[in-house]
Image 1 (tube, helix red, strand yellow):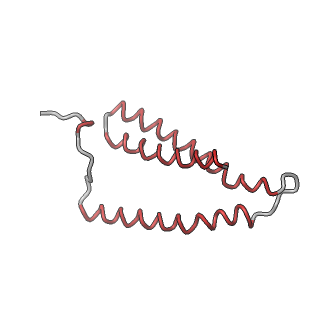
Image 2 (cartoon, helix red, strand yellow; image 1 turned 180 degrees about the vertical axis):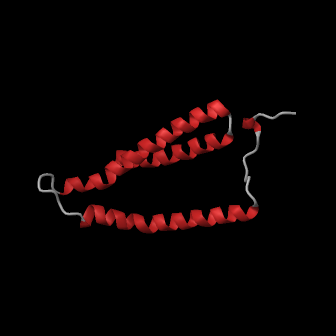
Image 3 (tube, one colour; image 1 turned 90 degrees about the vertical axis):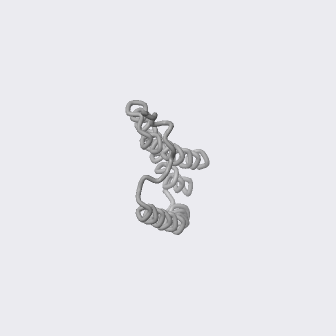
Length: 114
């Protein structure tokens, strides 16, 4: 009996040891992100010198523009992943598109806030 790719349960396809390594890497990257974000914000909003014409307002570009680029890139990955999922039916492409959509929403919200 052949099952559809959409009906397969979501779960780990790796051995248990590999899943533990991935979890450890995720925690490492999460910790590094939490430590580096305040440093980034301080350097962009306090340490960077003021522009001669725009004054302190130009400092927001150090956060606003990169967030916009990452948001655009994330939604481009959603587009590619969605097309690949429709073409192949592989669950992996749907997972990539879904996770990239979450990242895109976060960074686009940052753009709108700034």
